[in-house]
Length: 273
Image 1: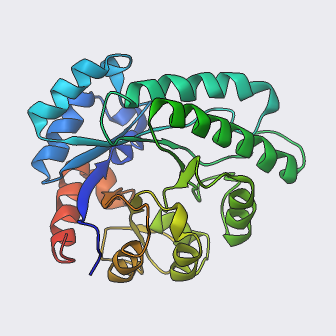
Image 2: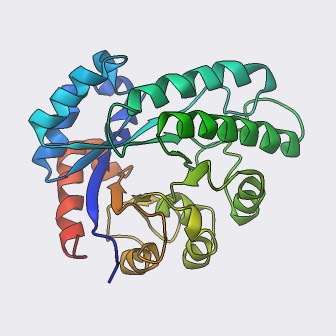
């Protein structure tokens, strides 16, 4: 059993991945996630919509929906790896950290460093680490924890265990936490238990999703992710705040995002959360 009470949130990328096929707004997301039985939400800079820059109004909408803001997630077209974009990336980080500061306990999750230009990989790790660490300094001053979310998507710089080892060696663990994503870890062909255990002191909260043996996104419980093992390891992480944020990218979710996240919430109850 985990020593930390588990709480289950939902990430809005399930709708964001639909692109122009999704015509709703943030209030529609809040309704679908609340109706799905979730206690919290992680929303992105793309999906915040008309609530951007309006934390008081968003807080009121969350309260009406019975939801807690787990984290605010943002990325950058720079992939956080372009030297000439560092200032702009840090301006964005500060803006969203200031936004998240209006929500007690909410984190800011920064997207995976990504290769968007030519040049040595080592240089890109150094630039990304500079951005992440400086954003972490902003967060500390504002009372908001900052964490990095590695991914396995196209051109990610943070794909396999060697990449994780490289970026974590450059990050200040007191300034920048980690949002492990089970699906991305498995797609990176890593030993999930070993990776989570090695870096458990950096874990702040968790993205939980599933893939099949070929790395194709699957509904939770339909793939190879060992969710009970994940929960057990998370219970040993000293800075884990208890939030399991479910994120769904499967074809099932593309066809019916609200239905898919509701099904995943039901699946989580079978794991005791």
